[in-house]
Picture 1 (cartoon, chains in turn green, brown):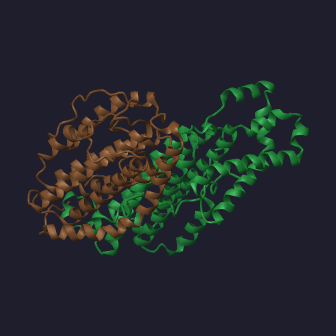
Picture 2: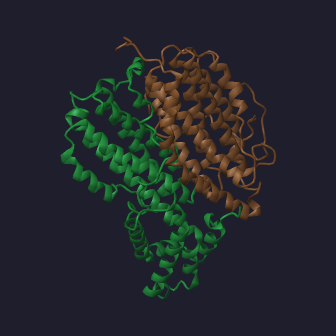
Picture 3: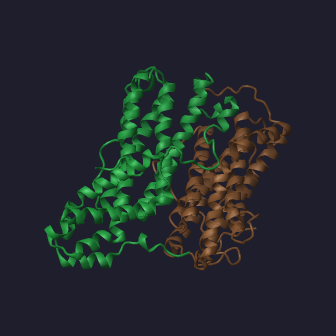
Length: 290
Length: 270
């Protein structure tokens, strides 16, 4: 197949442009704050319109590039900074646009991880999850899972900074609202599990979408290495949910002798689809820094 | 820890057939979208002659990973299934070469993936047959359900990869990854006498599949093929998580999925 040349960083072109002016890149970043904000808005609009199709990522990047060009010309940035065509060429390089999109997706991913950490932290303050009355296995799972999400957030933020972006320390704003509204209703373990399934499913499906849209190889592999782990969290949570609903909470433990007593649903509830869906994926720019 | 075992129900062949039938409807819901992606991919490849056998893969990545992968799989097999042995020393292959006849690049990845999925289908079927024949002792309902469901999902995965090949005018892969079968599955399966042994063997296969898909995600060029791999990898990871749970092991042992044990293209298929 034809190689998508837009997916490759043009180092030579970038180096040449940087030789024209030592300050051009930092100035360009200042000058593009507004158009980048517009791009985030565009992402929100796409989410509001019904989610994100990775196949649209290319079109999305083109639109971003067009937005940058239009915004700079309208704002007189080129005249102000006297960059002539150099700045425009830099901003129109595929590498710049692709990295901007990659950074947004990675920031959204980090925001999902930050939210997961905060949510599990909250759960551990509840007596039936983190207290003396909690199921020890559930408590251990929540604690370990919280730690894994913290590791994921670090990994995503490392990938962001490698691309020259700003690390995301905040939670996904849309799902944060969901969690905030759910907090008063978390009156038993089952409700906590339901909320966790929502967050974990949203994360793994978002990463599945992002894998097909990310241009940076490192970002793609970091995302892929985390996607499956979130899916495993979903699988275990679904199994726990099924056992709770079947009034078999006593079977939620890591006793190998347990298998004889598990209901048959435990053998399939954790992986309900042959192919993971993306109907709960978050928009790529939902958690991006504005 | 409670060790007392309650009486469990053995699953009859009739029950297993019924179980599999019940699962068909669930699987059918996700297949159309995947088949559409496969058809779309095949169409793209037909339209671009460059893609036919010339899709680039990362030679350096495969060369670096292949040797480590063989050792890792052997280690995993030895550690997870007592006395099962490892892969030994499979013939090194040129990962950018043309396994399965003239297939290369993304087509070779599709063929390799299909062969691993076929091996999983065959292994789970053998397990179900052994259970029906009473060779595994009492088989708890959850284990029988797991085997039937996982088998059906692996069959779906194989069908997705094969539809890519057939839509591009290639022959589907009906064989299995013989390198893994002969080096790991057959020696281990011969020693499986109970559900725990079966679960350990299944865990090896699922981990290998997940690692292989993760590696593919880093090398696949075509975006539709990438989407297929990305939609399957988490499902294999979920299979592994439940198997760990069944075995009494922590179900999500790693914060990051690994490529340890991935199968490089070049494994013998037959």
